[in-house]
Image (tube, rainbow, N blue to C red; front, side, top):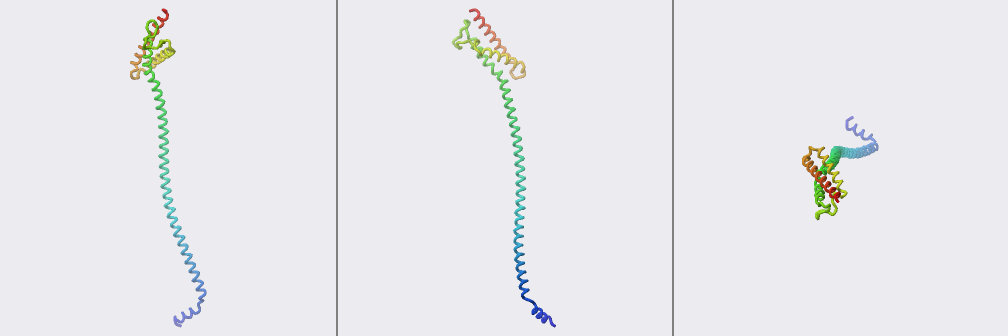
Length: 190
């Protein structure tokens, strides 16, 4: 038998219905394979997107950590600056209290000038008020401030101009004592 005859016989013996069914099965398989390829491409695209998203999130985490670190540094620096401000305010208050001893000299000198304007009869001159500053309630306070200032200048002789202010306060103290002494003499002689 020749090959052609064998082929014809083989073709005549084939069942075309099973072939058609296999062909339909194969077509549905190819369709399913195509659908799986589509899902696979979508999955691959999704993985690429997730990978880039993970990279962005990693960059965002790095930036967040950097901002957080800088924020903490700023907070620490602000706390340090607030502490420095409180220390400076406390120092300013101490300096203001210390400089008050220097400033009080002018006020005492002015009050002494008013007390020396009282004439020998114990009456106030036209330049001063009707009551002698020696009789005011401020006079003992002035004497106390002057004594405190003298003690302060003696304790802090290393301050600039402390010696000059000490001499000024001591002169003012001497003038106040003289003024008070003359005032008492005038009052006692009447």
